[in-house]
Image (tube, rainbow, N blue to C red; front, side):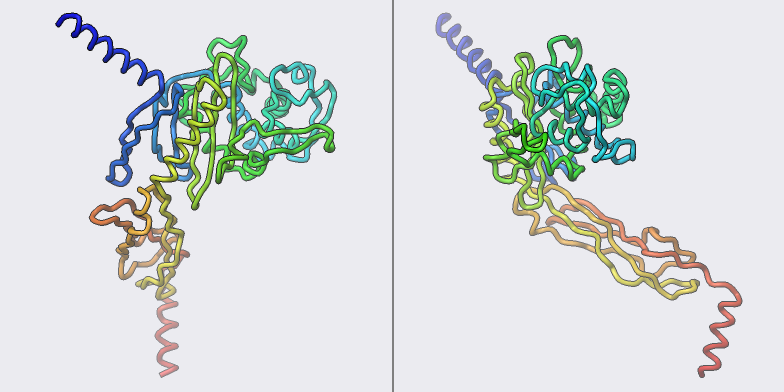
Length: 390
């Protein structure tokens, strides 16, 4: 009996170990009150699935564990570059000159030579498609003057975005000499969500093959899902012997844009299979409900220079279980009148979005323009006009 008991204990421990090693996790996900149970074997250390517009997390496994990120570090690098362009500090057509430091980068690169010139846009393309370390550093130096200052900017931006488990030491993710260059699956999803707001990034991250240097140097996307996964839009892969294989994979179907992060898979194929599994699960189980901004008609104004003013409801979106997006009803609650003065944007009601007995969200109804309070002479003018007409 003792032997049998020992064997049962060993068997239970072995089963638990195998489950943990495979990355299998059961994550009950609650969306609008409906539990969606996920039992997925992803064969990685950590993972997360996020809907990009709302930031809603649909699935997570060890999502806050700090890990080496390899080249998905460049998501933050690219984000700072795009923000610099948006702020007018850098132009897409601006010619940059390669420094000795940038030309010395190892790993994935486009073999830039010291003194070689290339436009900002071309460098962005090379980073996004081919994960070029030398191009990434060229861009960082253009934004901040040096890699050291740029890395400080990376860490500051990470803090601003609420990335609680990230610390960067370089622009590219090379980890032979770093001591604390880490991020987490959740943090990667957060910065990926910010980056894909820029159409220029998605323009390049969807390209499978391209060229640079007037067609003399070929570029092949490091993300094979772009070629083989329906709806794939990007975004960034990474791999080193220490970090293993990582990816931030984005894909869009039926108006819903998902961000899937896989960290520390053993091989490229395992990483891609895990991303495919998680994206498939997301698209199979969830949908994005969207109510666009819309006119809500006129509301009566008392004591104003005009008797009425137009109103509109704001845009509303949320993630719901697949199929529920067609069941949602709008319930309007709006005032009958409003007293002047009225200011554009003033809230005069709400639209409730209801799924069965549950309210899943609301959107404000606001007035569309200013209406001033009527004065004495304006009142007198109206009375006289009415008298003359009569």
